[in-house]
Amino acid sequence: MKAALVQMDVKIGETDINYQKVERFLHEAMSHQPDVIIFPEMWNTGYALEQAAELADVDGRRTRELLSAFAKANGVMIVGGSVLYKDSVTGDITNTMLVFDRSGHEVLRYDKLHLFRLMDEDQYLKAGNSFGIFDYEGTGIGTMICYDLRFPFLFRKLVGLGAKVLINTAQWPSARVDHWRTLIISRAIENQSYMIAVNRCGTSRETAFPGNSLVVDPWGEVLFEGDGSEQIFVVDIDLDKVDEIRKRIPVFDDQRFDLY
Image 1: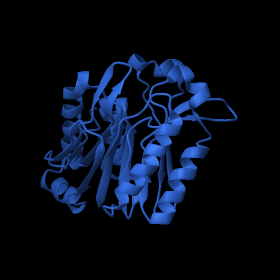
Image 2: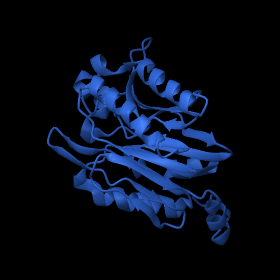
Image 3: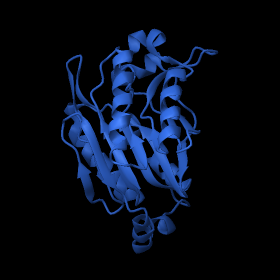
């Protein structure tokens, strides 16, 4: 699986600029002929949560129109990072990931499960209540958004549901980049799965974001680590390696759910 990781700056509150930028990155990514294109968290608005009711994509219409049409026209899967999303019926606003297959069909809507209090998500957003997992040509791919990274039971659940690749899309700040890197590598090792982590870069309201997107294999080896620049990174992933590592050390056969 060839994955294109789009590490981009996000202009807070500037939805038109952000959608135009994502469209440009989609076209640029196709020059690498990827199987899947992955974006960071909340790329449509940034953390302009005080304007969430005004800026959120109503029923995800704008996001779906762009990503679904592009996926279908180019035969590529798109993991749409996440966007600020508003339900026109309930009025609920969520931090939502949409995933489209090569035919442009929506195969996943995932609402962020764990809301980050330090960014006031709990004051403005509604938490999700279902797990993010979809199929890529017979391989289960589990998804989560930023702060979800700190909850190891979520990862174990996704692996139990069949995930062999785990994707985290984020707006993780530079102040905690050491946690970012350590947790991503740890999650790959303990779940014997690939970790693909796509983070934003740039600065927003004096908060710096490092980029530092990562791809880690199920043995914990870092296959790729990005810098702080806005660009597309392309990584080839050998999906067969997951089964190889899980046979080498059968942690899932040896875990003691009778005790914990």
